[in-house]
Length: 625
Image (cartoon, rainbow, N blue to C red; front, side, top):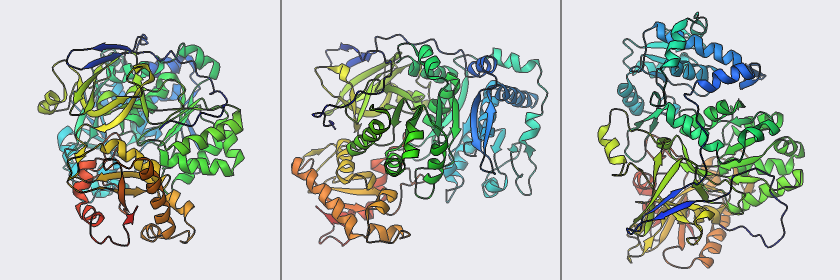
C-alpha cells in the first residue's frame, strides 16, 4: 500500500544502510535469478565463538535479563553465561551425550533455557525446543508424542517439573533424564539444573568446541506447515552463523555503527521454539554482543500489560512485534508521553512480522516518532522460514510503504519461477537447511534440480522495470482459487486488503469463495482493538458479546464498502464477513511456522462457518457489505 507523501515529511532517523541494488539474471524460460552485489561479512566459525569472544571483551555486560519472582530484573553477564554454558556442556559430556543425541526443551523462554540451549550446543548435542502449545495447550498431546518419538531425547529440560506432570504421564521416559529448574516433577526422579551448573569444567569442553563446524547440527526446529504432523527442520551452525552475518552486511560499517550507538538492546517475547525468536533475536543479540530483555508479556488481551511495563523501564535500540501489538502500543503512547519518551530514546528502527502492518498504523507511529524525535522511524520487515534460519530478504532502506519483503541479503540467491499466473520464489545459500530429520522423502521434494529450496510462496515486484525497489509477498502459490464464474481470486493479496479495510479490528483473515458466486471473509478479531472501539459493550464483555456489537458490525461494513468502491471487480470485491470467536488452532494445523494462517487447513476445519457465510438468507452474525 503506497503511503501519502504529498505533504513534505521529516527525514527518517539515519541508518547507514548499503545501497539498495540487485543483480538480475533473466533466463529464456522466464525465470529470474536475484543476487545482492554487496559482500557478506565473514560469519562466526560456530555459535559458541561469539559468546566466548564477548565474555573476554565485555565480561560484565548483560547478555540476558529477566524479571524474577520479586518483579526485579535478573541479569546474566557474558562472563557468567560462558561459565554456565561450559559447565552444562561438561555435564552432558560426562553423561556420554554427543551429536547423535538430543536435548528436548519444553519450557518457555528463560535465562536457564538459554544456558541449557547453548550448553548442549557447546557439547555438540542438538537441542529441540518444542512449542508449549503441543504440551500445555493441546488436548490430545498427539504432536508432542510424535515429536518425542521422532527425536528420542536423552534429556528433557523444564523450568517447572510440576507444570509438566501430565505431559510426562503420556511419554515413555525410560532412559530419559528430566532436568528441572524449580520444583521437580511429582513422583519422578529428576536432576536439578543447579547441579549441572555446579559441574567442574575439564578439557573435554574445549575439545568438543574444537569439533564444531558449520556442518554440525545445532537444533531441530519444528514446523507443521500444511502436513498435519510437525517436520523437524535441521539447523546447522553454518545456517545460523551465516544468517547473523547477512543481517549485519546490509550496513556499510556495522562495527562502527555499533560503536557509535553502544551495545544493542531488545525487549522480546517471541518463543525460542520459533525460528525468528531463537535464531534471529536471541542468536542475533549474542552475535552483536547486545542485551536481550526477556519479555514475559504477549500481544494478547490481559498479557500485553507486562510488555508495556517493560517498555516503560527499558529503551530498546530495535523493536519487533506483530501488528496487533503495535496497535495497542500506539494507543498507549498517544496517551502516555513518558512511555513514548522511553520507547524512542535509543530506538533506531522497528520491524513487524506475522501479518502486514496496516497503513494507518504506520502513519500513527511516524507521527509519534516525529513528535518525540523530530524524525520518522524506519519500519522494516523481511521474509523467510524455519528452513532459511530464518530471514532471506529484508527492506534495508527507508520505505514509504508497508507490505514489502525487500531484497535478498548478501549471500542469498533467489530464483523467481512463473507458476500459473503467479511468480514462485525459491532460495539458495548458506542459510538454507540441509533438510528434514529422518525424512529424506520430504528433503528431496523440498529442493529443485539446482538446489533451490521450494518455499511455496509467491512474490511480485513493486516495479517490474526497477527490481531494486523490492519484492512484495503475494501469498502462497497454491492459495489462489476460482469463483463459480471461472474468475481467479488472488487470496494472499486480498487477505491484506481485507485487513486494511477493517483495520484495526481484524488480526487475520481467511478468504473464502472457492466455486462460490462471490468472495467472503472469515475474520480473526483483534480483541484489544475491538474493546477500545466499541462503547455499546461493557469492558469485561465476553468474546461472543463483543463480536455481536452493532458498532463493530458497522465499522467492518463501512470498511468493506470503502474497499469495494475502489475494487469493484468480482475478483476483489468482498461481499460478506463473519468474525470468529475461536482463535487459530495449532492442533488443527491452522498456523504455519512463519506465523501465517494456513488458509487451506483453516477453511477446511471451519467448513461450517464457510457454509454460514454463504447461507441464504444470511444470519444476524454475518456482515453484508
